[in-house]
Image (cartoon, rainbow, N blue to C red; front, side):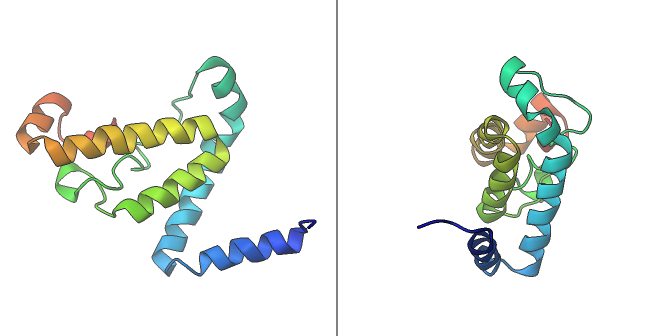
Length: 130
């Protein structure tokens, strides 16, 4: 079956029905961040492992999605993390993979397994700005 532009648009629209207004707004803001700050550099990132530091994901608070607010995070949970992963990966699969490893395997484990005093001793007050 040949896929048409209109069927692709319908599929994207039906996915939006799964999210509430706040989640849709979050998805759109991560998409805009990714389009502006990752997409223009995706090829260079893949070929040279260079990532520009003009505006970091930490500044945009993408690393703190699942981290509790007392750790400097947003405390939003894994659905928001998945939304961010999808939008970042649209801009660059390699950046998406790196983001997922850092934000979930690293930061998430620190806040679930370590004490707040140990984390502050090692990283300062805002773990999510790494």
